[in-house]
Length: 463
Ligand code: HEM
Image 1: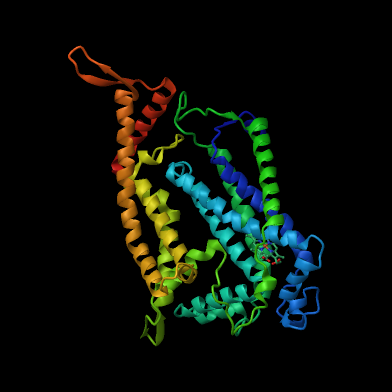
Image 2: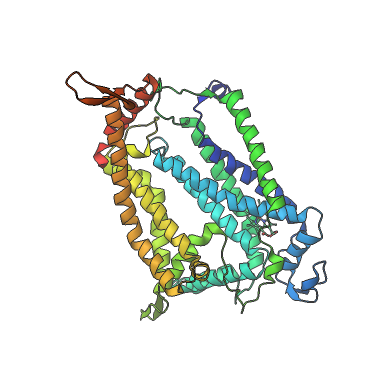
């Protein structure tokens, strides 16, 4: 295997950087996570604070919150480690989303890489699960509010809701949630994440990386640099730089100042509570359904304010993970593809992608509806109505506009190929007529566009 990999070439593209940033986040999360384990006490036992942070001295709190305060103020380097852990936890989903977007818009998910897309999606889900469970661990007021919402969602699911809530919380809220989440956070989710990353790496090695069309690039070859040592050293260097930047940000920008939020208290929630950004779309979905939408059936209360958001988000995520299979089914294109496409070459796919981004973005924005309403001095009701309209109409408008723009750009490329580019030089013909001189594109650029126009043809059934 190693000898085979040594002879491999890999294409170079700036978007490889998103993978490097994801890897750097995972590295920082594991190193800092192990450090945090030495200071963290996963227990909701009530204690009285007698530590270094004066404003909270004498306050009743959980051992988990007290230990997180101790990591922040008493253990040398603890605050930097907490911040680096949290910053990496914030950056990881962003880097994975960017990887998903690049893969989607370039068609890198087509055969033989459909499995790789599913694995990347599962890595994203696992990063969300790890981030969400970690967010709860300090047991501060914000994480307590988040857990209260989770309890409400669990209880709102008919038939299994109460059992699910009991399983998670181990009884009446907040129950043993910290004790239950801890092993999930430090063992189950990280191990699952590593496993998925390993499988994805294996699949990447097996099929090789796809490349953009260009001079000399075909379905059969790879134009790039050797994997060993050039690519490996380049990626390794960038990985270390990314780790350094994460630590640099963590040393200079405060994140999760839990001492300002105070300890979790089951009856309290602070105004303007915001979840970490990556769970915002789930929170936003809950805010968009009017309260009180519920009915009785089969002896149960069916709370639509919980069920509709759950169904909508569930369906959205299911469509995302199944997209490669759906596209293959619609286009009947079962060929293997090693050349990528530009978004304009596949207007329908690009339209679908932008519609999905708008849907996600509208849900995400809705999570901040209260903050937006106060900052912009507009009514909360109007803000909610705006996001309700954006979730329903936004994707359709985005699809139509994007598809039109992509087709327009395609035609512009076709025009460039057929007539060359405008030089800006106007000449007068013997008959007195003025024309602008057009010149052919450089050969490499023509080659790239011709390849892409071929990509357009293969994608034609989608049109
Ligand atoms: C794999 C992805 C992971 C993500 C996204 C993640 C995320 C988080 C987040 C957001 C927090 C809250 C930090 C804060 O206090 O502000 C946290 C806490 C914590 N994490 Fe992780 N974590 C991950 C992996 C790990 C691993 C592998 C370990 C241990 C081996 C670990 C151990 C801890 C501990 C002990 C805490 C509680 C201490 C504290 O909150 O400061 N984490 N995690």
